[in-house]
Image (cartoon, rainbow, N blue to C red; front, side):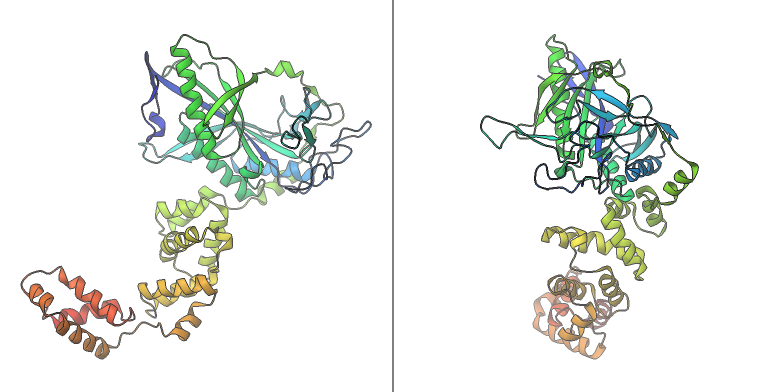
Length: 496
């Protein structure tokens, strides 16, 4: 029987078997579909959800005499991705043929890069909650460009399988990490950070549910600090949650196998999301089994300095730099992390700041009020009924005293329902905050008269009732009284 010793602290994740503790070694090979309207070596479309075999060129179908021509946009996007993770860009790279037979691979080989990839070593820094060291750097070994295979469809007929070649030839970046991760939580953090970078750069949409980003999960176990064990590769896992679950199950399975005197087979496995388990698919091949050799139909890629300069100049502000800028504005580290986790949220917030909103108040409101409302409505920020300019106007009405916090919440709810501007809502519904001392004093006097028991208790030393009096006053004025004025006048009325 195996037991997980810790999941709360990612770096201390251990599995305990009958003979002691085991450490988990994890590497990820992420296949990210390049953002491009055309495929890697043909002009066929890449739109998701098209009718089967409706986006297939003669090149994709491997018709005799058809020659591949590299799509420059796919190369540009891969280079920009490498630059975003601080990787070495190889000015000279080459395409290879990876030879194997499968029904969804018309050519009988995949055009990929093994010996001379487009992008060399880089790194991605991840944040770890509850750790003595709050960050960890995960090495990236390489990024190479390759073409995707087609798709087998097994659910169309009881005895037949069909082949859809729409994905055949679609450009992929294979982003290969080093075996630097030591827990499912670290792998999850790495995937989320990589997906954020890809979305910021615009080189991949990161939609794992559509298959445009998926991970092959390499797992092995060893005694802490010992030599690496035999690894397995769980193929095509399509969500962060499933990647973490696959690691947890596969690591526990390997420990149990070793504890029982067995050996770990070097193999390819599949993850079953329904059971949360992995199962054997086939033995794992080595590179020589694929008989790699340079593709004779494609010249090597040679990148000019001007092209590299253009790629570098086109990069946006990336998540780490944006988070640091937000913190320099006084925004808390927590709020900065939340605001930069997804590029859509960061863009929305930047527009809010550009509209004149004060950074700290804007960050607090966005991460609490706006995100809470969107979560309740089941919407993403790109679907927000409230525009950044409207949010800036709402925050300005709070800052200048026109609205109290409670009134601002009321106005915001109306904005969500109608899409109207806050100023128009305030005018139409008479929600403006009042600091009229005479009106507030009259309400306080009436409120104290109606609550003689509480007044006696307060004057007898039960000072906590002050909050009760404030609440009753605000209730009587429908939340329109200025809270600071209420506090001052209430203290005066109570003789303080």
